[in-house]
Length: 514
Image 1: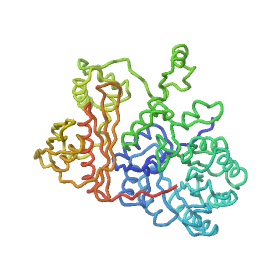
Image 2 (image 1 turned 180 degrees about the horizontal axis):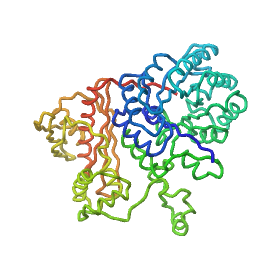
Image 3 (image 1 turned 180 degrees about the vertical axis):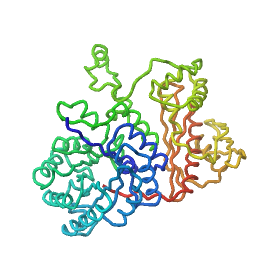
Image 4 (image 1 turned 60 degrees about the horizontal axis):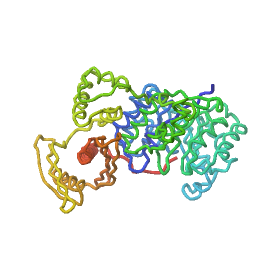
């Protein structure tokens, strides 16, 4: 069966999502999981954007052993040089060059004629070929580029030394018939097309990213580019999990497969959601909370008789395996360790002991601890951030006829403990006013969201916040059965991340790329 290569751009295009700003440790955590998932190529970032981006790409390049690591670059020598520096330690590096080709981009953005576009792109590819054996070239906004000119650009890229030519539907304008026809035409008309791989990079502005990518596969695409959970700027990108499961479920129709370890899909989805703060909608295909839920009586009856009546994918396929072992406050360390193994976590003895202590604390607050509770507990602090501030104690006073107040005690990095009381418009506002007073950090709360990890009155609540200080923003997460405590923990976590960011090179502002 024909293999479709998976190019993951969660760390680059996915990070362009509004409100998402991953630090280097978080990028590494995702990159390690993408290796476990089995993606073929990882686009780690845009090295020329800032020293921070270059350092992050370099860290991923040094860490990843089983996938090609890619750096994005405009068709400029200084960008290519930055990518060379970032990828110098990669075992299998690749440069991703791009230049816009559509009439609207040529006229309004580049102010170039067709000949100038061809010359600029060819010069960049030939320059890059001196340093990279693998080069992917993307004619930005290819979907709105004249088809005959796109054939010219592709032929030029092949002759100049590109090994992959990517066709981006940059603004999500295409429909499957149109997009598939582009690949069919390139395959039939461009000399030397058999020497390279053709790739599809789709955006979801009209809700057709996955459909367009599958149409590209049917018409000869060798590679699909996308992100985990379909995140990305505007409406997002092709969701990699949707491509993988469409090919696996309908292999009879597509005659193609990926090399992904499908059992790692659910875990990868949770990790990306956790670190980016982007909640996966309940009705999201493959990885949404309702993807395998059946409420209709007719559906439930069919499922009880034969699962395939209403379930074309089993939850186990993507790694959603519910253990029959129910844990509570009386459960021992051996049962807890067995549960971790069931859930796919391989921890050292020290890590198991630390997790068990957190579990016992949670079990004192909940009668039964669910699998999702344990996953959330283990993944609460996926990336350690130095604790300049640590929450010691919180007390909140609220009444519908009185002004909410909060008394907080925080341990500062120098070992001192500070306490204060503050009022606010609500309990969360009072908590945050108290933290601001104790830390003397001048920040702006850009985003606040809360979700329930599980069901029931004693469910764990997970809070996500984004704080901004000057031009630097950071996100924080907090977990507790008490949403006010979770809110405080998330705010303190974000403050610690802001302090850490002040010590590192600046990151780029968001910019619209392919």
